[in-house]
Length: 196
Image 1 (tube, rainbow, N blue to C red):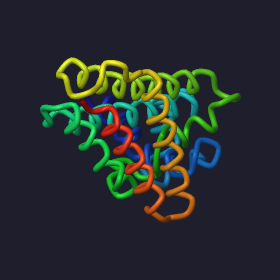
Image 2: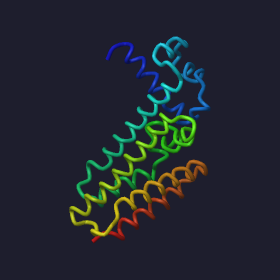
Image 3: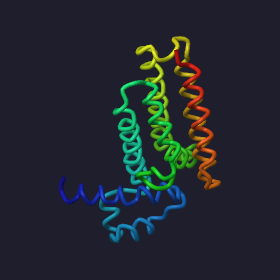
């Protein structure tokens, strides 16, 4: 990686928690300048606009989220254990963040809804990725005989993803983890209900 690539990556990594905590609209280029200690030319020499930087930052955070989910489930050998690893992670979600500021789907998605089609598409792709991973865990459990064949993986994936996102939101707003613990227990019971 050359100097230009390293500088660009440094800006992305430094800007990620700022955008994830303050939001796209709430983050000014001056915030990025203060955090990176670069001159304006250092920023605009690497990014043509704030929007371009936001897209790169989101891609960076999304990749971290994907790798974290893969790592959580990789060590477990059964579908039930894979789900349990995910549940343990979400039970401590707010303290487990590699990029501070909560869930990027919520944070970036709420701002991209009608104002930024390129960002909206990226947020949608990350949501679809999470849904597909949940579906995969259910299908894997069916193949291994852990779960009943009649369990609808698409329906459960929508339920699990949306209930987790809601749990993250209310936990973040109230600064009280009891809501996330309740959400995790609801999902844990749902998984047990479909076990053979």
